[in-house]
Length: 226
Image 1: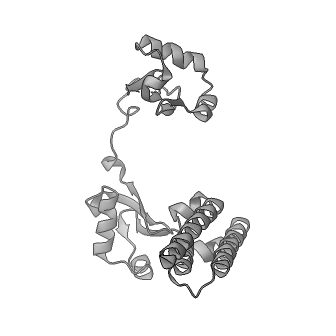
Image 2 (image 1 turned 30 degrees about the horizontal axis):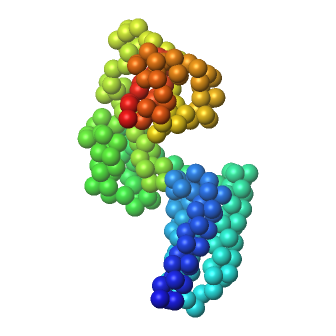
Image 3 (image 1 turned 135 degrees about the vertical axis):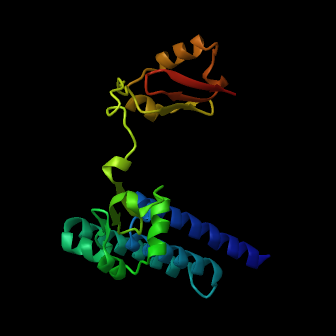
């Protein structure tokens, strides 16, 4: 029983500390945008896992290791933010794999890519033929950014001379689980009274009756009742 309680306590401490540190490190760390953030994220998780599983590792040692690792990661990120040379060293640079429809074989070899890898990355970008590609750039996070040839680009409203209605808003959730999202309300510059009036027009007399309400691009309100 004592063993279970000890493991549970270590797990809870490790989880809380990991959540706090990942929040401090920011969204870039969570998205694992680069090789560096990917590796540091794995290492941080491993330290937390070792602290939970291995009893010979004191909690204070695990806490110190995770905190120091997070601080060093922040320091390196700060250096890369201020120095372009450090940024290139840490995060690498984008590499042109296809240029003006021509495959760059030297770049392929340097990035250790074969044609099967290239076609797979293109398919992930919804491109199924190399002949459709004007430029393809391998990003530092391993993803492929693709620019199609002009005659392969999809037709836009401007190309078809279709009248364009500009967005008044971006779709924004205003009510979730019967509660108003105050932060979004302020950002959209909308008054609570407006929402109440809109709900009444939909036959709803209480915010608590609403499961979800979203402000639409044209300024209307989409409502999903409980």
